[in-house]
Picture: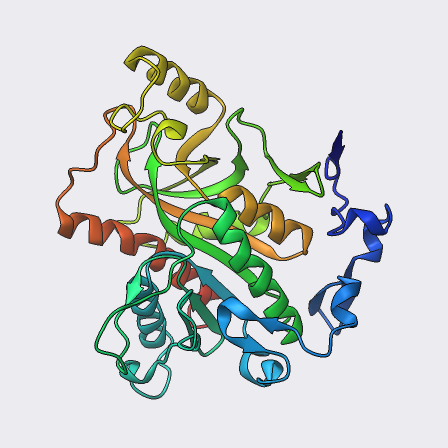
Length: 347
């Protein structure tokens, strides 16, 4: 049986077993002009004495989450711990915040799953890679792996964290790398819709043996604002388009260079052409669940990924490392510009 939950503008309930009225689960409280606080209402959470955010090494009893995170306005998720710490240090300088960038600490140092850095109103969270801790001699993993199943774990705990902290007027960004479809390497793609293998803007989640279908359309206003920001930047070529989210890096993305391959180069090209005709401009592995969960919880969100190659031209990345590093900085530059304009640093 298939439950098609989000085919209209009504948000999907988080727990189907509790009824059919979405308003019973998502409560958006208006508190003054343009101030919205989103509550994810899982009634089971209300019966718990403490909510332990295990993968963040945080909890509602052990930490004062509103004091720690209540001023957060922007959350950036992506990349390795090294990259996201560098992004936190970059934002620190861009916002001219007091103190040294060397003093930025990993809030999640008590776990081996993720790394999290808070810089003023910005939260930077790594979703893969390793970070050398200043308190340890060996690198520690801060890795959700890659793909939808593991990033969804992080998103559940992140959204609960933001709820417990009573954050308002949030914008969530997924920043990272991708493969391009019909765009030059180094192009930043702002996602309109995250689409599945059939190029449909939907994410299917299996819950208790039933399939829930949720919309993956991202916030139009944020995407438009980001595109406008890109026009004010030098050397950050940017387009809007759909993003294809796949289940793996090789066969699922039509690569010819994996350990397994059951299709011809002509079939690969035909699929990529079909994707391009459907408005797809890049491929990655996390966007559908990111878009769906943010939409369900009423959080404005954007996916901003740079392309490392044009998949029409090949499968392997042979670009020099220093060029790739410059490419990877482009989404950070664009999101930083957006944040600075929102905070009034740029008129």
